[in-house]
Length: 108
Image 1 (cartoon, rainbow, N blue to C red):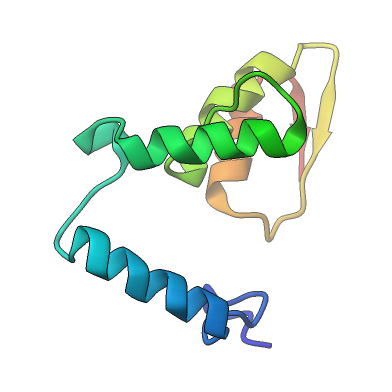
Image 2: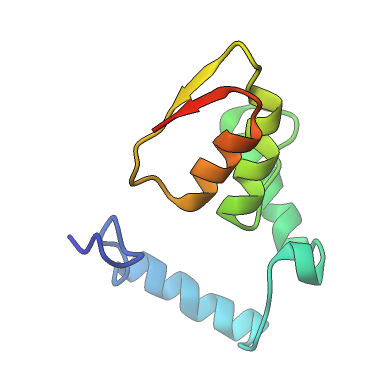
C-alpha cells in the first residue's frame, strides 16, 4: 500500500481503470484542463451528478471538483456554535479548513 501517493486503494493499475482512462483519452483527448470552477460545468460533470444521484436514490447530487471546494461548502452549513468538531491532526488541510469555517468549536 502506497500511503505516500494518491493510490491509497492500490487501484492505479487496475485493468478496468486503465481501460476507462484509455476510453476517456480516445473520446476527449488530453490537454491542460482545470476544475469545473475554472472551465465550467461540462456534460461529463452533469453525467456524473446524474449517475451519483441515481446510485444513492436521490433526485439530485452535487459534485465538487476539489476537496477544498467541497469542505468549504459543506462545513459552514453543518456546524453551529454549540457543536464540537474533533479532527485528526493528519487530516487533509481542506477538512481542517472546512471545520474551522463551520462556526463549531474545533479541536484537533
